[in-house]
Amino acid sequence: MALAAAAIAWMIGRGRASASAGAAAVVALLAADLLRTGAGLNPMVTPAFFERSPEMSRVADAISSRGGRAYTCHVATSRAYVGTRPPQAEDRDVRMFTILRETLTPSFNLPQGPSTAYSSDLTELVPRYRVLDPALLGCGAVPAILSRLRAAAVSHVVSLDPLDTPGLTLETIERPERIAPLAIQVYALTRPLPRRALATRVVTAPDREAAAARAAEPGFQEAGGVVGEASSPFEGSRGTVASVREDADELVFDVDSDGPGLLVVRDSFAPGWKATVNAAETPILRADGRHRAVPVPEGRSRVVMTYRPPGIAAAWALSMASLLTAVATHWHDRRAGRSS
Image (tube, rainbow, N blue to C red; front, top):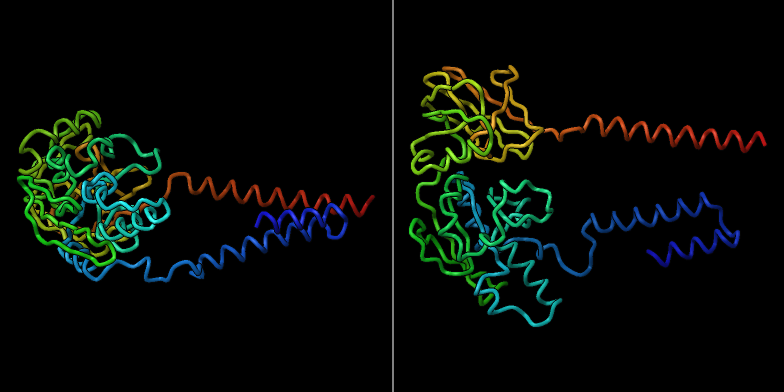
């Protein structure tokens, strides 16, 4: 691409092509390359390279069907991986890609599921309280973070290393041929908190730090307690929560509560999320310092949560203004050129 662009620039410099034609040619080359890549025409691998093995597909489907959530130990630091790491860097990269896909690692798991919790911060833009310290990502640190995993509604822990940790029960060992001789241990976590539920006890806190500290008290969350950041308390209630639809940017629930209460969704709280309860706009509260919660009335309710990136309207307006400015400038320059 660089050589082609250089050749086009040389032709423009020699007067063999106009600047507008050269720019159009470069744009066409880039568009063709992007279309080729997007259409899966990369000849280096087949589509099967990006697919999960049948063994781990069954595991993923089983976790998803039970409404579970997975946590994957950091693969690169596991003893099993280090012992079988290829000596050549290029072979190491391909093998690591395959292992990350097979072990349900979040950054390689988004298109397929199941839902996951916690991973390495690949962007260095995520607030610290929402990610684990790098020292806690390894499989050896699982006992230290078990309560955090349980609070994040993690139902299964995936590891390349065997884990002898109270609170984890070995559910299956899978040996996909493509990552041999490695084996994947899948452990069930005892008593994970439900991903969506009504809080049976609600207390309030003035800020995120205080809410997180209160929620971390032993037994509080396990007993159905939730800490909301609000000036006035909410009542706890009992009832059922049925999932109607769960997409990346929209969640729909049918809630049946025996009194005014708080629906807790153990997904990350973030600006941009909005909620309606029975079509009426309702505030989303931060629960336990990191999750989302919506007040619901007594009886049956339809709760809809939607996400729109903050500032998206302003971004569209700025983009359109830039486009109009570019068009107006081009039109003015053409008129000025004809007048001269």
